[in-house]
Image (tube, rainbow, N blue to C red; front, side, top):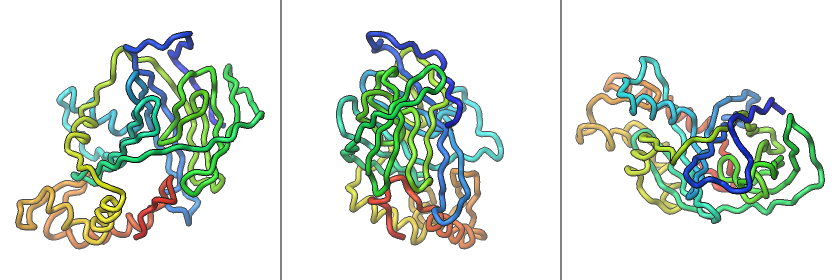
Length: 275
């Protein structure tokens, strides 16, 4: 397991409501399940007195630039991803799936039927306990710490008597490792996330799948309907910095379609969109 660095987190008898507790995870995963190539990213888990919020570090960087009125650096690539929010003491989740300039808001109830093990291990100053569960078509192993009194974890994993510090599936497609934590005074505000949530469209699971398929079938046409000039024309930017023009639209469309189909290895296999 990777080295865990826990900074600034004070374990105490009561949790101060006017704070946000931030946990940073290294996430290694296979975008393409048929390949052995691993992608590594940082994700943040922010927990306050109302909810937990899980999102890529790219959104933290984007908010810092917006807050300081700094233009996005040339070549800056924003990872198009999801935002997960979880209401405290519930199984209710909101997933905000960002498709460039369209944001789908999918509500769901998630619960893992954890089986606690007596197996324990010591990592630095923390004692971790093992738990297992089958969820989303995968067999998961979690190592949690009762010394960190939050029944939360990365993505939609929760419900153990302590924070999930390490989590992985038996296919070795996903591996989450806690690497850092800190306390932040007050609730964290993120303008990029707030704007994404404000522009989101609530959808059912059926509508979500249908929209994702529609996007896959003709990504450029889908996006032009959102950001173009209303006539299916006009240049626009993708979140990775690509400029889409009339000249390169066909090529870009095929690249997007190929990427969507190839990199379709979601955490939750049971609800995977069939492209």
